[in-house]
Image 1: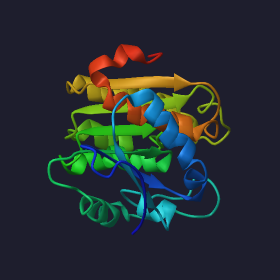
Image 2 (image 1 turned 90 degrees about the vertical axis):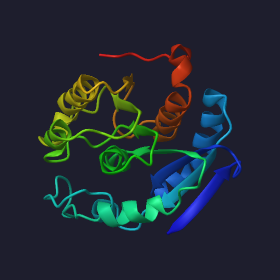
Image 3 (image 1 turned 180 degrees about the horizontal axis):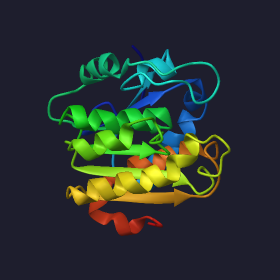
Image 4 (image 1 turned 45 degrees about the vertical axis):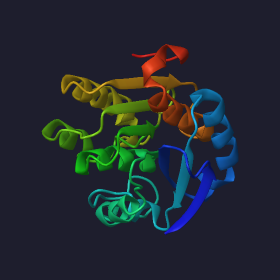
Length: 217
């Protein structure tokens, strides 16, 4: 795996983020925003994903945009991610878009992650909320967010994202999992670095979540 490391490698909090080239282009801005919001030292390991639709998908599904179908490479990717665990460190997994979906799915597979930071996750993914309803997440806390214009799309599958993320929050809270759903301004492509930073910062400071301007619907 290709890994880009930021922050203090000796910090007790280890953030794991799945990234592509677009994420890496703004990663310095994201790291700066986490530092500003979190008030806590951390090490961020950004794992470069080579085959986005394959490596982050929990199961196969037909393409919903373009011609590239979704694969089932998430299990293999998770095995590699778990090799990054360090004894005595709190490990948080997160990401944006399909990487956010992967982070959520990973929380159902293992208790290695204390928290899940899913920014604008692709919860419209076929069968995912049904999967959530049938299983219990093993993380302690979950952060979810979405842009307030993301569900206003002509793509009928992706247009379900608002409905699905509200359902995801209800399912998690129904199982007693502390969960935040934050609504950001704009569509899916607006400020992914800041949205991801807010996701990580919230789970790092859940003991003082009032410090964040969180609009829960």
